[in-house]
Length: 438
Ligand code: GLY
Ligand code: MN
Ligand code: MN
Image (tube, rainbow, N blue to C red; front, side, top):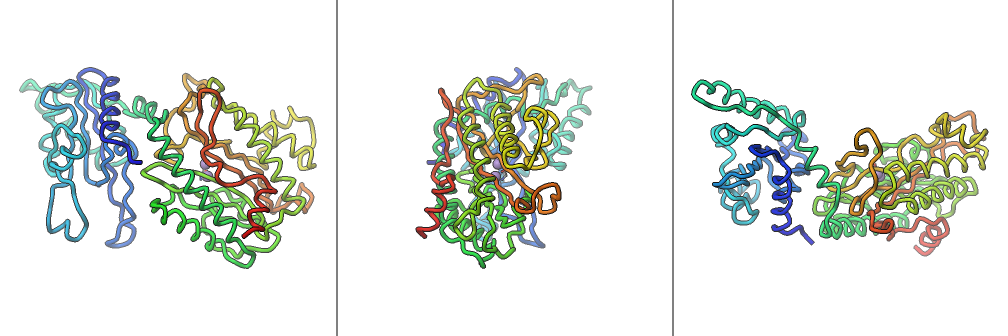
């Protein structure tokens, strides 16, 4: 299921073919981040670096030097160190990254400052994404300054520092068949976890019980980490968009909203389901739920190549605003309420985002100021919601504190889109049936 060595090589080749002649790209790995005193957060590789190498160690830098005769693809990485490896685990070392990761050449990271200026000298453009890591920013500028001090001996400092993202993130936006296979697996694992949470939900249990069964479900399938912090919000907590305390007792008669997706071989899934804690929707919950579902299904049907990025969002706004009027939560003319943004009291976020190695994945949404058209291979979420704040005094009290979001992941195909996350039900009757059978 892993991406093969040859695909990584192709990605690098394609990137180099679009870089300026006489340029160099510098792509650093992520660093370990301290969680407390001498323990670190679980290491997560930088997505750009991972996309180009598949290499999972910190303290590494990839250098791409198109046209360089002695080797175009260089890696600086941690040296082998039996003492450190005894404590912290195996390291590939320079030899390992050449043999197993297809680098042309590799050096110990401790030699980077000494070797890098010589590699950069004479190249007109540096591709480097500034502003993500102060230390590397300073290091790169230090190399450039070092070359500047040598101009009287004939050294040529680079004239340009350009953001690699403009090229690389366009590549990452369109997923290959092997990426889609991994994303389907991430979606399947995550769908199964949501089904399990529905089956295990009982009033009187706590939100963290559902979070833990989701986490267990991910990890036992080899997806050890969620792609983002899981949200399990019951009752009015569902109206807080980034609620992650997950520590409230779940009350009979309330809904619970779960937004959780695993990371599998680096790729994210991102699913939201909302269901009744006691297994039966109340009439008000069902009414709001069905408006959100209708808008989500309409947006999925509207997701096709050639349609603009914003089109599915506009579809959700229209269906939701009409639904809010029908339920008496908004009053007025449909177009006026859309125009004035009145619906944003209830639906205040966008209908989705790109999905890939990052949960909010890279890639522009607009080109030259205009929403870009959808293309086959793009993966996005479709996640409309309605949230009636518990303190919204303008609505009938029966609606207050109801929050519903339904989120699926879809890949744009030649003729429309394919839902990756169809393994977990979203029809209200199907959810009730699944919960009743538990
Ligand atoms: N879970 C983050 C999002 O849905 O965008
Ligand atoms: Mn989500
Ligand atoms: Mn999302």
